[in-house]
Length: 72
Image (cartoon, rainbow, N blue to C red):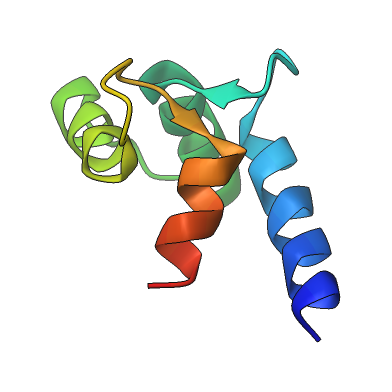
């Protein structure tokens, strides 16, 4: 079951990783939220969300950080 969940999580993560570099930035997050939900979030709010999941301090979200948050 974990493999299926991880595969699904990776699909979601990759949707937000617009440039395919393995990291989601606040700007990428904002663009996808605007596209999918039709709402704008501030740069500060997007960065705060990324920072809340960022464990290595690079102010970006890796899949590993995303996956860890999904399993809290």
